Amino acid sequence: MSGQQNRNPRRQKVILNHKLSQTTGHSVQRIPVPRYIEITVAYCKAFSMNEWMSVKELQVLCGQLDFMHIYDQCKLVFWSRISRMKSVVMRTCYGILSRSKEFNLLTYKYDVITGQCTVCDIREQVFANFHNTAVTD
Image (cartoon, rainbow, N blue to C red; front, side, top):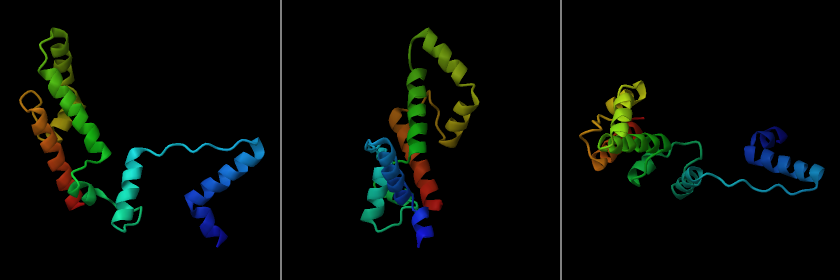
């Protein structure tokens, strides 16, 4: 039984906080949990899923993206907006950026041409990619 209690990370955290407060005399303040973890826990509770199970399907049904797709979408939208700027400096930066490996991989992955696609098109492509990966995994 004690071996199972030691494997529980919540139990370990409580024990560690208790020991730390005993040795230092100060109570340990709780660190805020990132928002995406709260959302994942809420999905798990609402749909009676275990925490280790994937919630990608639920995110797709709710119209939400996972972190990596949000990050990729932000980069693509930023690059798209830079490509349309009239500033010579920004156009030069975009020209250099468009030759980078990361730029080419992302535009290929999401089938996006940043100079021609609108922000809405980019968002639709990223969500379609997330939908396809979440449903097939």
